[in-house]
Length: 250
Ligand code: MF3
Ligand code: CO
Image 1 (cartoon, rainbow, N blue to C red):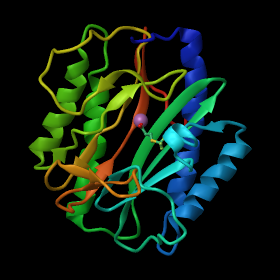
Image 2: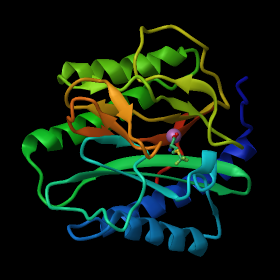
Image 3: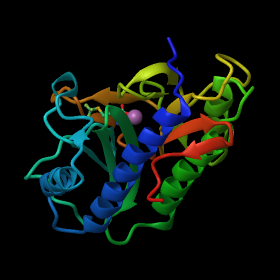
Image 4: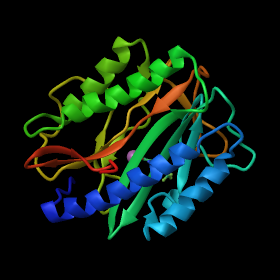
């Protein structure tokens, strides 16, 4: 069941989205060689306190942290650890969400640790572009799978692959609401988009094959072929004025 949001609810979601974006930018600025992934999580904890919000992730299905950190061939849901130290040339996905006044915001980005090769830069660029291609399809009377198709087409045009096992989602008073939003599919399928719909769009893109496997920790998803993977995510509302990306700093 899809829960449409009123303009008042979307205003609240804009507040949580803006806080998510602000914190993610601070986390991004803290990414450098020698930093542990646990210290990034601790910084996120401190910022959550500063903004007087709650973590969207802590306690979710037993997850203990407020941040997911996914390095290189890790796709999503990497667990912060004091033993995991960022190295020059790594890429790291930061996935973060908060709840403010009962409403969730969820966003992710992938950043380079120091210098990375042009080919890896292209992976990051194409993944972020595919998110925006998906967002461009969020308009009244389009179908849900128009988003999916736009993401997949852009990614595959560049020779990369989209992950099938994880998808975007509706979001509101819960982190994960209907509908699921796959990053692949034929156009003009699924529900018709209408005002009040709020979606988290989140392409996960592998440099090699699309298959992923979950590690023994029960969380970390990695590429089966060990190729690099990138992840970008925004929370987006469809309003009377069109699509509004809520997880921006302004
Ligand atoms: N941002 C992720 C998503 O959109 C949620 C991370 S799972 C959690 O599904 F356990 F960390 F919350
Ligand atoms: Co999400």
